[in-house]
Image (cartoon, rainbow, N blue to C red):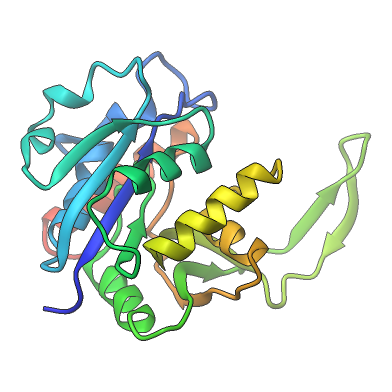
Length: 233
């Protein structure tokens, strides 16, 4: 068992790009909700001490889940933006300033044990911390004002950020606070740490670690989770 790990899961989003009235973290996949799968991946790690889930103040669903009764799980009110939810979670955690924080998307239910262990192994001795990420394989096109291809963007050196992202509590909290005070709304924790002058480590993750965003993502995630349930992941 390595150094203690503390987790923050922002889950206050409204799922505007997904059809239906139920937020994406409460859609059912392979017998459990999306957020239950996401939390299970974290709670299954032996070094995890606590998972703080930042919810919408209007959320009435989380408390009915079995995982909400786990003594390591704490629910708090999040904010309208991801960075505000993460900051609220950090301020509620029992972690010390030098403890490691894992921030994981509530809508990433397919996190694999091996990639989580790879992230922790790569970052626990790192001066900054880092994140799971995936080198881009597709050719990228930038759209012009007419909705046509304006230019092709070279993909060399480009990575797609995944979660979890792993930083020490003090660094992450100060980086997020400084970014918000400057009027920035960083899209992920690494962006806040970068804005503070640091270079997070990139740790290769799995293409199966998808974020539920569009309706088709639900079908793909279901297939991944069913495969894992059969011991094939």
